[in-house]
Length: 527
Ligand SMILES: [Zn+2]
Image (cartoon, rainbow, N blue to C red):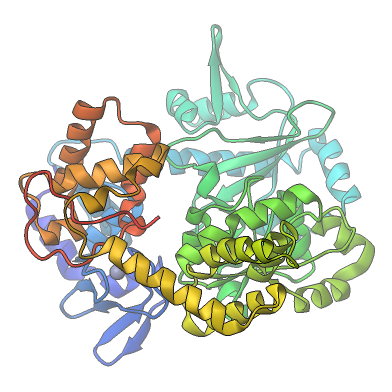
């Protein structure tokens, strides 16, 4: 238990501006500070922080609270853990009434930090000669660079780290939860062995996981920390901590796909580069860049798979209202190879030649149809419109309407007309719809889309539902909605659960005139 007067003392001493600044850049405007809201998608800052009142408030989504609630929401932790984190930061000494272990996540961060230092020291020992040789061969013998990424080495053998942790009196059971060690019948053993280690940090520089490159022929070539309470592979960008200042300075991020590509870019001065962990880009990746930049240049491998992956990510960019450019590296296999054979000058030229992903996408769509025939034109227009409609910026949307018109050799007025028609249809579909009409299109929804719709329906029939809770449902309400969902459509699919977490971003609610009657659902999902 944290004594109440300590919580009061913390509330008194905490600087909410400092706390929020750890997560997003703020600018002073009058008595308030403003930044891009981390809780909803936006382009102009409507998220305000007031130091004297010690609160934040978003004029867009009306999210509000104190420094403590901010940390709870952003770190996904409970009240006591948020209080402890802030207390240690602002020098409030908490002697708990009943002794209690530090937060679970804190102990995982701590273990990861100890492991990072262990691996870094190992890289300097004689047993790591092979690893150093390998790094040197690939051009990475620059110690300041290796140090800034805390590159390390996991020794061959089965229990180097296990013994190290035990010697320090740390829990090996917890190390398993951190993904550092694994268990077999005889006991625990090191997960990473005979590998070059890349510590993966969050934006604040705390180690959340590791990547390991095997030295010999042992498979897999790259091994990552499994999913833990801290590490989510599909949401994590490697190098974000090191790149954060440069992102703000240059105004864009370059995204590559692997550890060595990233290191090569940083070595040659492209310090605004981040890397996915060998996965395609996700909406979560983009959101983690928000506040630092809205422009992302993808520097994917020139092969077909890389290009297809970038095309698939277009949707996320449109949803998040972020810009994506494609940098073409010609025939080079990857950025690392391109840099070593052509040098940084050629890379700077390639970056200058960046082209919007949207244009790439529309060209790709165009290839699928015979643009000389009337029905080819019609089908191309149909498909291209689906994408153009999602562009939030009007000027940009007009630009691409013109582009599509030129490609299909039709008057641009026809494209505008089609856009207008479509958006009018959409308005009818998601606002002011009555009766059975709202279920139009429901039959066409499948899988996760259907699950999303179902959750909306359940929410709207939940007794303590109001328009306000609709926009910002409380955790209790969401849990109840999910429980009902499980009861009626058991079991709730993984997709449904994921979607429930994302749903406030996916759905817009318009024209909710009155509190809905049971069974009534006055909205359609905007898909
Ligand atoms: Zn907001």
